[in-house]
Image 1 (spheres, rainbow, N blue to C red):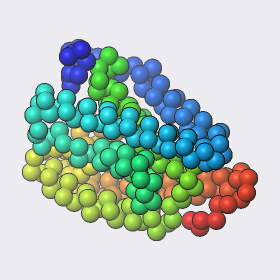
Image 2 (image 1 turned 45 degrees about the vertical axis):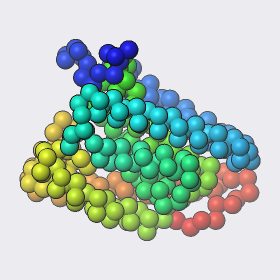
Image 3 (image 1 turned 90 degrees about the horizontal axis):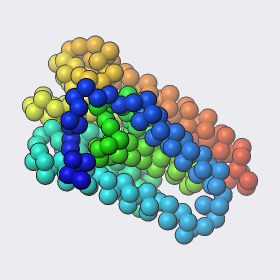
Image 4 (image 1 turned 30 degrees about the vertical axis):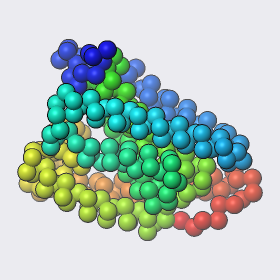
Amino acid sequence: MKDFFVLKIPNEFYRTSLTEQTIPIILLCIAIGIIYFYKDKIRAKERLDKIIRYSIGIISLTIFVSYYISVWIIEGIRPDNLPFHLCYLTNILCIILAFTKNRSLFNFSIFAGVLGGISSLISVDMELSWRYFKYYQFMVGHTMIVLVPIYFLIIYKYIPTFKDAIKVFLLLQVIGMPMGIFNEIYKTNYFFVSFGSNAASKGTFLTFLGDGYMYLFNLELLAITCILVWYLVLKFIYKILKSHSLNNDYSYKM
């Protein structure tokens, strides 16, 4: 049982299999499909909605807390093992969102959570194995930050406005600046922000953004582009949900 919680798998040559990569994505798609198919029944039964939300929140919280407790027991609390990554911060917000239904948390999570979660699931850490807890923490954590905001999009009809999209981008700047300073001091990679190099992106697909200050410029350009494109996709989804709504009650303007 102790070996299940190791942070680095014994076989240094192991690479995550295609099955290990795709199963969480398939399960995520199935979950979203079920939520959409049964959306009217979930909306009609407040108790069912609460059970779903609270179950998601409790599962996410349990795995999140268990992971960091195991990390800090094994390694101690260090600058490079704090929950400061964007996806982990969003994971915390999604847990709170699941219990509180807070609209502001949704607005942030629908952009940072969905975009961050999908990109992480696609470009997964290739050293993860289903035999170890870290695999489940990574997969559950990143699928939940996609699933929770999508749940509120479908069930609660929460729709972000263009203004909300810009606010999220600006908020990321406010958070990213101190994270970048923290990275420069402690040689960490939170938010993948580097001011004078692309050191924070090492081992990720973001290395193609270049080096030096061009890396930071391209990172900002990529962020605003992804947010705006995703906003347009959400606007399209909104129209589909509105057209399929039985009582056409999607009156919120994007």
